[in-house]
Image 1 (cartoon, one colour):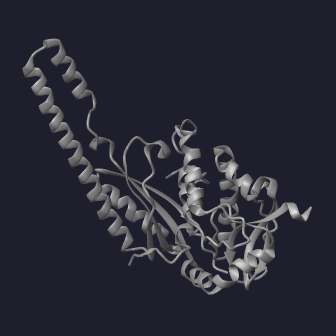
Image 2 (cartoon, helix red, strand yellow):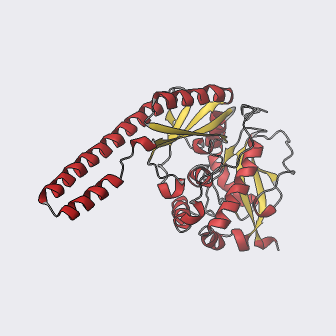
Image 3 (cartoon, chains in turn brown, red):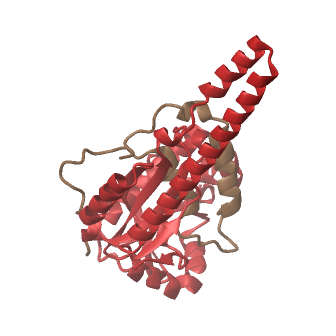
Length: 69
Length: 267
């Protein structure tokens, strides 16, 4: 098996990714495999829904993003 | 009871070679299992449809605290597993009613998914965001002071002087924007030439990024796993070359942005 992630420089501390960067990826990236009997929420809806949730909670994100570098 | 459970998918891989994923913890603290489906292996958790069914999801996705908790749990499984074998992350909130329905959905996509797995195998994603540097932003206090002076003098000349300064300031703001945008394009072209694939995400709004500086670039780059150090050095060099930009490097990420065959060719 390929060890794909062994390139992190040793001096980088364990980090907690910024939520906004994570949502860019988990909501707009990733494989979308829906079928007639899946329960997946349509991708467009999902992005809209989460952005609405984010915009309604801007104060929660007003603190500087953590660990983004 | 089984009618109340659904199957939450994290990631798709080929033959997992019997890798044990039972030590991972997923959404809602559920255990993770490797399910065989249509000749593929899918990392999944069995989840309560009262929380993760379609109706509940639509409600819960509006709740930022819930969304963050679930997104981080989803990511932690994908991130840990991606260190063990090549995988394709599945989009957040992909839920099936059973392993059988999952296999039925994956079956027709099998060859495409295997091709995508070959594309990302041994590779990782890095993110680069570029902001217009703080120095490039206009000083908003100038027109306010000028306007105050004009009002105090009550003179037509002061008002015209204000308008003139305001026009010059807007022009300088536009110049700074154009300069930062051109620099961001140049940086992206340079970094893309060293990447296997690239994908542009929409710039994050200042409200979401937590930065008041306008974001000029929000890009993802797919790189061979051992190219990370060189890529980070290129980003640092680009930051030195372009003082009108501030660059923010994130990663390595599992290949979230490169699961579909729509990335732009880099090199």
